[in-house]
Length: 422
Image (cartoon, rainbow, N blue to C red; front, top):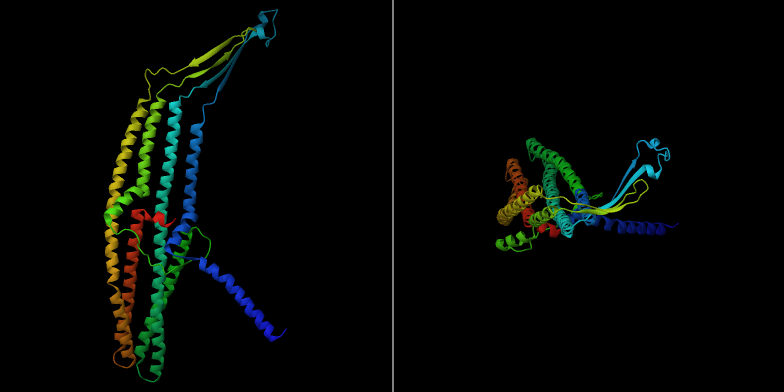
């Protein structure tokens, strides 16, 4: 095979490999919204909670079933059949009395309707409760996404600082050889570079650990990375009053609490229906000593003493409790939303004021480095400028983390985080 053919084959193989690999790696990058969507579909804890809904829905099937008929048999034998010489067989029909009874509890339509309504409302409550559980899980996912993002940013700025000091250390070795600087300058530079190297190693492990934690919350079994171009754009109403009103209508814990009130009302109707006696009716076939008898059977509770008063009273108290719980949650939502919204505004303003500081720290570091390399200042000034630059960068990203965390808290308290995952 000629060299040209071998080169052509190698090029084709490399292109095929790149075409197969690139889409896969792109699929593993997650911005915040994609992370929420994936977690909603794959989070293991959410998958476990989904079984609760199926369990509650099975109660609807049970509530719709009618009571089974009851078959009762009683058979009596003559104690001493031998006392009748003409009929000494123990199993002879003339020595036996048999009682067959077929009955059924007649469930009143009101009770059946109340039972079905009660379990249906419980099914709706289970759905709303699941959505509230989902809201909390999505917040955990969003905050963990932010932890990974922050760990990567800390890693990046440490890497920049280490590269700067490594570069200066190489220059200083040359300058020391030319006797431009003293050995103290080189030692100080290398010492700072070694410190950055140790911090970098520690931060690399933190970043890897946070990625593993995020992968668990996402419920995926693949290598993941973040889309660091996510700008966290806050794109809905900036009017706090409108936001409060919308949240009071849509937030999952409020919807669950409202449904809980309906469950309590359905329980009152059920307990009242249970206070009405349910008759049991049927037929009797009773051959006595070979003589057949037919009859009817009927029984019903006489509500002289127990009319389910205790459960009815309890159901009314439970409704009052559910109504009070709804008021408490509504007030709590207003408080949480007001705090998180104002905190978001403050953090946003802090970030906007930071841009000028970043530019100044970059300018100062470049100026001091230039001055030091040209003998205009000491190594102490440069190292101080380097530390100041790193502190400013870290302080900026810490503030940016607080801003983005306030954004996530606002998404959570407003309930909008559930809609982001759709």
